[in-house]
Length: 362
Image 1 (spheres, helix red, strand yellow):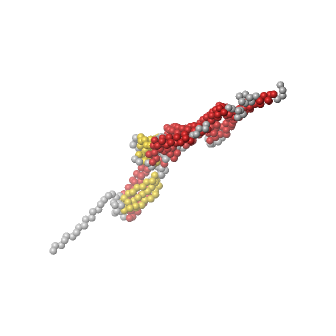
Image 2: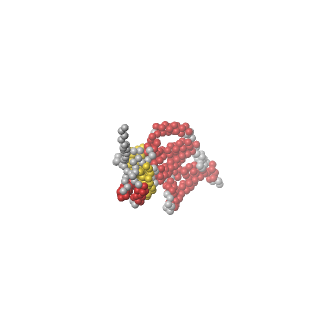
Image 3: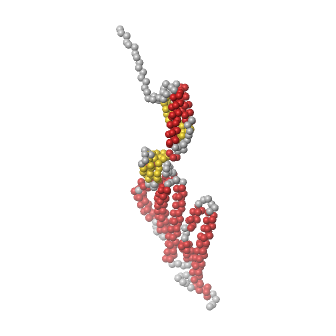
C-alpha cells in the first residue's frame, strides 16, 4: 500500500455524499457534545444544589428545577444536530431535522414557562390567605387560561419558523377573539375582577363586609362569583363584577371604630349645668376601657332640645366590644346626669295662653 493511501481514502471516497473523514468528524463532535452535556448535568447541577442549600432565596431552586427538565433524548438530539454540521445533508433531511428540533425544544420551552407561571401563581397566592378550595379554584382557572395562551403562542411560533404567513391567521384570531369577547362579556368581566380580588386584596375569605343591602362573611371567592354568608344565615352568591362595583365596606380591615352620638338637654338647663354636662360625658368615656376621647360640645339649638354632639374612638374593631363599650358609656352618662339633676329632653310643646281684659261697657 502506497504512502498516503489511507488519507486519500478518507478524503476522496464518498458515502451518501460525505467522505469517511466527515463522518469521523461528525461522530467525534457527537460524542464530545453529548459528553459535555451529560457531564454538565451530573456535576453542574449537583454543584448548584449544594450552593442552593446555603441560600435563603428559592430562585436558585427554581433555576435547578428548570434545568432538570431537560432529558437525555434532548441532549442526544442536540448533539446529533451539532454532528450534522460536519455533514452534507439533503435539503429534505436538513428540513426534517430542523422541524424535529423546533418542535422538541419549543415543547420544552413551553413546559418550562408553565413551571414558571405555576411558581408565580403560588407566590401570588401565598400572601392572599385563601382557603384550600379557593386556592384550587384559582390555580385551576388561571392555569387553564395561561396554558391556552402559551400553547397558542407556541403554535404560532412554530408555524412562523416553518415559513407560514401567520399575519392573516393572527388577524382571523383577533376577529374571532373580539366576537367571543362580545358574546362572553359578562363572564370575562367576572374573570377579570377575580384577578383584581386576587391581586388587590379588597377582601379575603373570612372578612365581614357590607355592600348594598347585604351584610355577611366571605366564604368563597370563585372565578365568576363570590359566596357570602349573611348575618341572617342564608348563603348569597354575587358576581365578582357587581361586588367590586358596589363600593363595599370591609370591617375586618378596621383598626379602630369612630363613634359619634348626640343627646339633647331641656332648654331649662342653666349654662353651668350645660358646661357640666360635657364634663360628665368626657369622664364617662375616659373612665371606660378601650376608648379614646375626641370631643364633646354643644352643637345646636334644636327644635326641642339643646343638642350635644360627642365623638370618641373604640381602640378595637370588634363589634361586640363596641356595643358593650357604648352601652357602658351611656349608662355612666345617665347616672351622672341624674346625680346632677340634668334632664334629657324629649319632644315637647309649650302653649302660651294670653288672657285679655274684658271690654268696658259704654
